[in-house]
Length: 291
Ligand SMILES: [Zn+2]
Image (tube, rainbow, N blue to C red; front, side, top):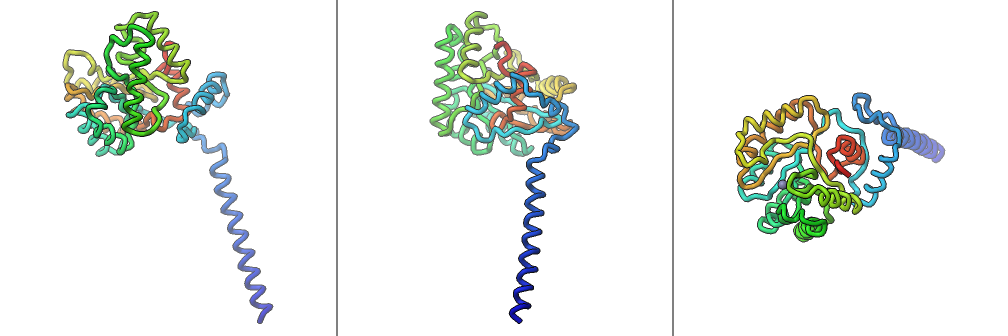
């Protein structure tokens, strides 16, 4: 009897060991294998480690963002960026639209607006939206010197830190963009250099809604502007605005998101941007364009 029990136990134990090690081997192979890189993803082919990628990974190492794990690009990607908020009327409306469509966006917020509407900033953060520094004042006077400009960004960082209790991301967006026409060229060049030297990235865009002009643009034109520019692109950073007077943009957003989704675009944000996406933005001159 005893012998019988021992042999049964032995067979059971041996079976357990075999199934344990075979499943362990399977998952080990799955997560370490290089074949995870999908063929249809064009940018994933660039595996040569250029000097640029080394520099990028150096910078991202100091990012203090554990989520920055790398993976190949999707076939089509969109970073929807919403500037100049928060505003009491449009930001929450846009947030609802994003949530209803199950996508996330990046809000480039103005510090003084964030101070006035802290609950909206917290609401964006609780909903998993990315919140990025778009200066404290959005006043073009801040471009009069390097110091005034960088102080304006630092002030916005401290407002966001107080509200969200987390370190700001290593991204900023200059009011009017990095090649704006309101600053002096030499001063702006110095500011851009300084920002890059600090290990930050300044973000521009390659698709614009055209809703920044003082002349009002209708929601149909906003949709057409965006979709026309996305037609032949696989990787887009779209600029739209959510200041108080951007009601037409808020109205257009639902259709824009639905159209982009139906064209196969995957929505990404700066919160969990990957080193490969950073590299692609550098290539496309969306990040650190004139540095
Ligand atoms: Zn702006």
